[in-house]
Image (cartoon, rainbow, N blue to C red; front, top):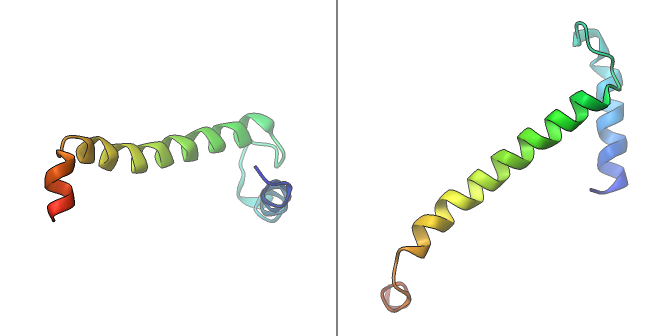
Length: 64
């Protein structure tokens, strides 16, 4: 993770602090949960099509 992304996240948290009810703007648990959810979504977005592509024999894929 680049430092610019982390600083951008902290800046966005400060701007959105009025929308965070019952959560501190710089709560590490919240940041960790967001990172985990986004990572899971990215893995699913890449993994599901990759599993489907693995089932196709290479010779058929190259002919297309």
